[in-house]
Length: 186
Image (tube, rainbow, N blue to C red; front, side, top):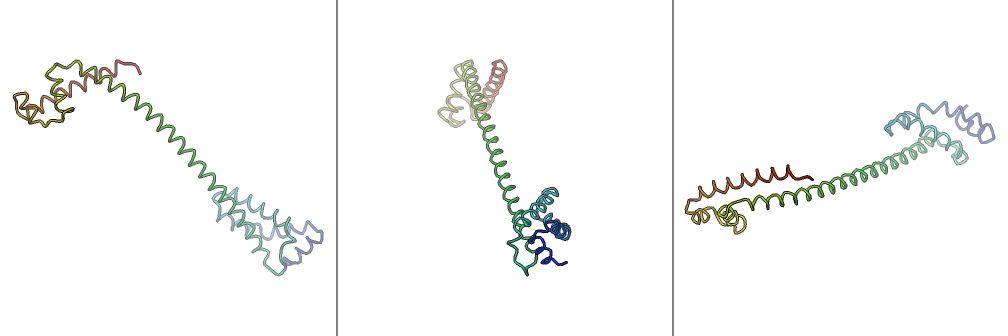
């Protein structure tokens, strides 16, 4: 029996005849679909849904056309719907990932802000521990932004001596800050 005879029999009430069409086209349709979706199980589901929809809408099939081409069109629509669903899920997953990343960044900002406040408080304490000349040199370099040559002249030394003096002060401050941060609870 050819496809049109089987379709006529099904439309005349012989529902079992549709099984012949399923047997005839199931494997070919599966291979068509499996190339369009990533998952074997999804391909089998699409083939099954295609045959169910074809059976339900068999009266819409135009006699004289290729039944297999009609099945492929139905299957392709199912594949497109699956691609849209997958794309929507991927977008949602990306949004969730972006939202989680934003939450982590906000938490990180809060932690860094808190850490920054602790470091500033520790630095202030350490600056108070410096002698008057050391505090003066720090102010000249980092508040007044004087060049090393001017600082050296103020100290009665050269630029290189001023640079070394500043280096030692900064090392002491760094060590003091580290020590304070270890001692202070979060």
